[in-house]
Length: 503
Image 1 (cartoon, rainbow, N blue to C red):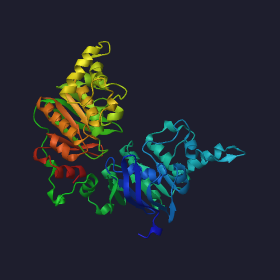
Image 2 (cartoon, helix red, strand yellow; image 1 turned 90 degrees about the horizontal axis):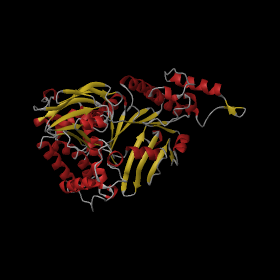
Image 3 (cartoon, rainbow, N blue to C red; image 1 turned 90 degrees about the vertical axis):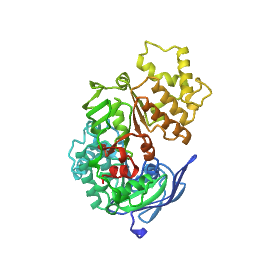
Image 4 (cartoon, rainbow, N blue to C red; image 1 turned 45 degrees about the vertical axis):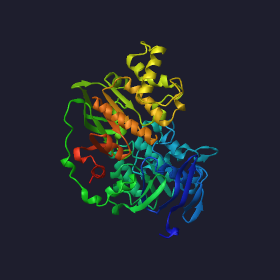
């Protein structure tokens, strides 16, 4: 397409952070009256590209062209002034201010040097009515749902005459009805000529609303495709970097997948869900098996784990352990029932970086037995030495600060913490992310050996081949819904990818 007929074009974008090439020679183009999805797995470069386009980060190379003119936004405010507005997943408005104040903050209409409240409220009301939203604009924003707050953020973008609207995961906290309402608005804005860059992990939504898809992987451009001409299976393959000859012809009927592996059931979830996080799901976890949770980023894998462990309190369904209904409202409840959980966010939800290796190892056990039964220093040292040797943790000693260990050894310390509680079920969310290949192999071997000894393991990994190697059975998730269970010969990459794609 002629550059002069494009609304926005990014050419040869480079962005480098210390030690990391975040974007390498990336191109992106947006037409007027188009909804264009930006897709890619974690670390693909989506967020960095958005930050460059909106002036949050300055590009290190390349050009940004808006309506034929070269631009270089120096800040989000500068980008807004040029006509590029962004609505983030976490609505960055002021919940304590009124709806009208949020729409006009920094641009309030004045009369005789004071805010003209009547005009501001009237203009806000008319603006929202154009979006088919009728609410009291004088009420504090915090009184309304996340969906309404998203609409208010979009209304603000419209009032500043945005030409380009960037929506970063806008549906992550919306229910199905609210998503439909948002999409109706996007189609209306598209018809009026606005260009919309839409970031989402929900495959169904991509095909419901977008015209074209640009895919990034590891900071590089994979390609730009017409949505209608890109089969879902190919979309998945391009995102995760797996390509197979004759891929579309190898489809198996997912209805033929085996049920849960036979054995002694440890935990069973029936209709368990958390509104806004994961739709109600059924799940059986048998003793001595590794159950893999697979799906794209944002599919609901982590949300299932967090709900089972009580981090996100379930608001529907029931959980039974060894046949008895249990109440898991908090992680402490989960620990008391023999559950353990290693978060995917090792830095923020795993290690306590100001504490030593010893102190990090004994944390969960101390929480399990209660702080009134304090573990003595001598006992702590004995425990730490035992697990440092057991897991081959490379450290100068138990008193070394954990923040000074490598990522792989930090991960082993977290595993030691939970193994010390002698759990019946170990939930591992991305346990090998960001660690070297040697440590990965050690952790994978440990997982399999724990299962052989009778422990139940729930395993989550973005690396499909790793999930295939470690899992004896799999639950497949898509768009926050558990869509299938697979086992036996079905546990192979081609079939799993087709199941994720919904073929």
